Length: 193
Image (cartoon, rainbow, N blue to C red):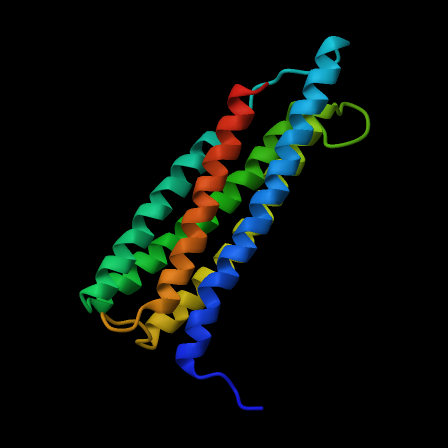
């Protein structure tokens, strides 16, 4: 058996990415459905705790949206063969991704400082759901940051150009997906209390 050519590998990557994205969507659809069911059941018994989300989650949302913008700049730069702008845009996207992760960490610390714990004394079902949803998204962002690191390192080697930016396109699709997913989850947690 021979190995796949570069072109064959490219044809396989995007469909695999969409399969992965579909599975992530299903996971979060299940989580948000579970949240709604728990909320409905516990509201009847007056046991659903309503609390303010950490301000860091609001800031993290803004940072995530900015990072989607900077990766768009990176794609445009690659299409224009502007290697300097490409590298700078990818680096900024990476820094913003790391900033999002740090803000999420401080958001969890804020919940703890208010006595809102994932489990044990001071925990409640509504708080636990927020921890689970935010933490699981955070794990996916870590995978996105790894993708961004690889993409940035490849850009330093001149891997992307106007005629060859497939890997950058794949990275951008995944990063935009993580952004849209967080905005959905954030709005969900803000408005469905």
